[in-house]
Image (spheres, rainbow, N blue to C red):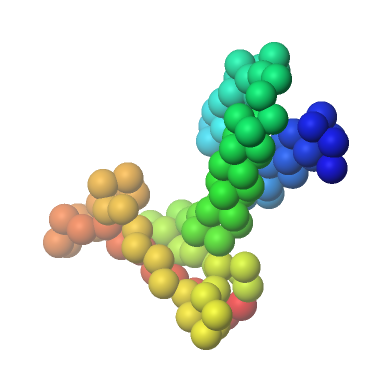
Amino acid sequence: MSAVARPVAVYRQLLRTVRQTFKGDTEMLATSLADIRARYKESADEKDAAVVDKKCDEAEDVMDFLRTHIVQAQLNERGNYAMQPQERHLDDRGNFSAQAPEDVLEPEDKRNGHVACESHQGV
């Protein structure tokens, strides 16, 4: 792939991945897209092929992380966050394991002060 074609292809793939990952989360989507555009604009004049390749590799790593490690949780009618992992979120054995960062999930379960989060394994 040419020195120009790869960064353009990776940029487009990254935008698609972010749109898919954060679909329905307008704040995260807008922030992510703005960050990607800013980083690409910042590196637009880079001529060193090794640096360009490294940045493309890093963008591909980010895409892989987003595809496999980010699962959107939706607030359900009981006040809990429910996740519906997709096949891409499963490991080689078909297991899904995610840890919800308790400090970012709301609302708090008033009975015990913990955030309630449930996972649905039905993929």
